Length: 195
Ligand SMILES: Cc1cc2nc3c(=O)[nH]c(=O)nc-3n(C[C@H](O)[C@H](O)[C@H](O)COP(=O)(O)O)c2cc1C
Image (cartoon, rainbow, N blue to C red; front, side, top):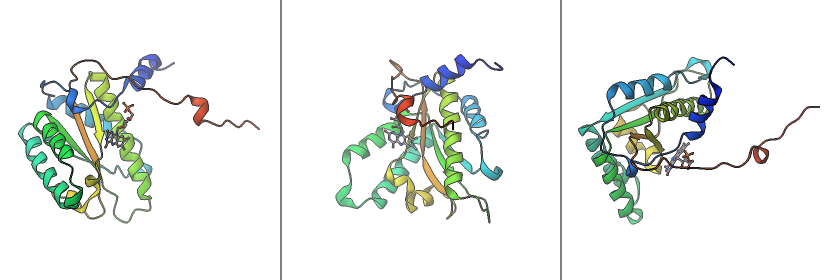
């Protein structure tokens, strides 16, 4: 065995989506954010497109992003469907977390790589972010409310027409218990063939 598989397995299985409501006020330092992103960019990528793009908001900028997100929500969701609960949650989250990363995807000009593969590459990058956070004892969470896919979101993030925002990544030190989860057993999701 070249690496310590039991430790790797533990990090993979202990990785959880930890929601901002359970983060303490302890700030996440920029060196740690950089480590998280430096691991993100080592994800697999078909054709070496490296389609991941990150917009990192920290400190006061998170609150500014929160105000912009509220505008994005209100302009992309019909007024009759506005949810005060969702708006309150958004305000609370963006006024308390110390880091918020917008996960974006940029295809290569004139590339033949299908979009789904660039999305898959970005998802692999996000898994690297999740795992690095877990190793640091940091909670993290990929959030994808519908409005992240809106044109208004693209305008706010100033990303290209063919780019996509795939969600928001929250990070913070958890207060209280690390969450537990479960998965369907392997037999349920696997078919084996040997002839
Ligand atoms: C692409 C993607 C988008 C997600 N978006 C949301 C979301 O908008 N809201 C949410 O509560 N969880 C979201 N999650 C987190 C899942 O709810 C979470 O991964 C799932 O419940 C399993 O829990 P675990 O991550 O702790 O294992 C998202 C996960 C992925 C992979």
